[in-house]
Length: 200
Image 1 (cartoon, rainbow, N blue to C red):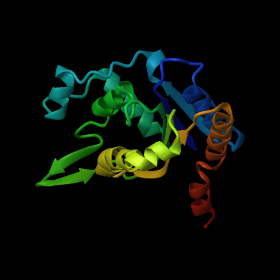
Image 2: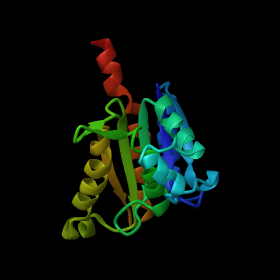
Image 3: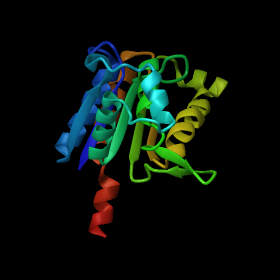
């Protein structure tokens, strides 16, 4: 099976990239394929533009760069987003990727006054890398707010099923090392549910 790993961090030496690499290693060691979409390195333009507006209203086809990203997702059996937490959310680069790529007509559509969820086959794994301690997130409700905004507000709206939604929080190197282990283990087991279904 194949996973698309989307990374949104400008520094290839970041913990975010290291987490994505460990996720990919776990997938590879379990016999699965992966593709990494490094949005910063690839120069993806996150700005929702005039052509995107035309696509939203179904007056024109989606822009070519958007169709290319949609094709990447269509080729994948699972989507993994690995991102740093900026201001208690995902970076603007990743949010802009979602704004543009998860478009009306492809990810969802409105029909007869209701929303048709078009990505029900898609399985999603979210790994947010944060630099504050868990107590801060609990105290202010940030973790719950992110799940509402991202898991429900984005992916449930399109019918995609979020199987993993984790905040990898660290304030020292020991915690960072543990997160790399977590990412590797997730990669190794990413398609375990599908394999069990086939065996049944």
